[in-house]
Length: 347
Image (cartoon, rainbow, N blue to C red; front, top):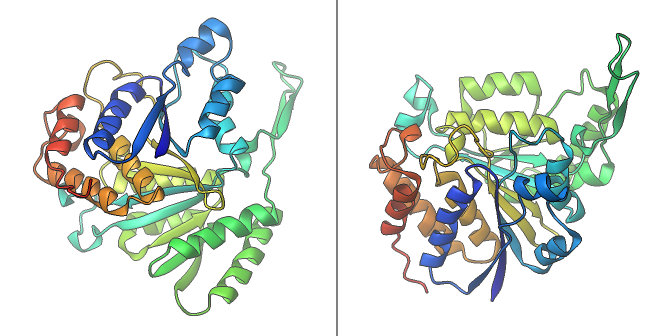
């Protein structure tokens, strides 16, 4: 039996996670759920801690994590998010952030040219290094002479292993994105690791390299030319939000934080806690449910994952969805509509 740790978190996180868990339960697979509903901003505000070491060990003892969202306007300290989501990513060494972007229906695309709406790509983002590791500091804080420094960290191990993962999941092409013409030292390391990886891969896949500004332009001009994009932590964060918008917005965006070596993964919708709509019952559960499909595939339930993805596509195409996708359903109603479309019979 596979154990899934469930951390709904903040804002709309509990609302969309509830629908994702219900969808997993509807499949009647050999899954058990360990709910950590108390790991949230409320606990941080009252107790000064969100995730204790005991909570972390419960997560570590599971096979994977289904995560909702982290973030609350009442919390001004960045340490809260670092103690929860970033701690899980770093201490479990979830070095791959895998963010697929698939257009579910052409009405969701902002692109004018129908020939360029065939979007089906993955952004592979390095997840444990780069600008987000927190190396840096502030001098003379609050004065006219204040100096703030954030340092980007790139290691040969970190860069080479995420590029290797990108080649493993690619179907037809890999594009490496950097800014090596301006960010000299880290950029050159990425280019060297890229050259080694392309030499090792041979001619099986098409390969290309783009600077991040050019990549952003090309994604808007014709995203259908891309299969897998591999890049660093900050560029991947930005480009994957762009690709999400190209296929319907943040409400449909799923992600997986993975350690391919251990098989452990944390799966979460990309949209965040969205406190402005929390509690209104209008949050889109598609991103969370598609994240659950990624979870299923990682745990060896590929056919069940496909069934979930097909059910999502059917309901979105029929307009049985939340208002952000052109429908009129509530979060719960949209979740029920997806489960009604499930044709899974493998249990």
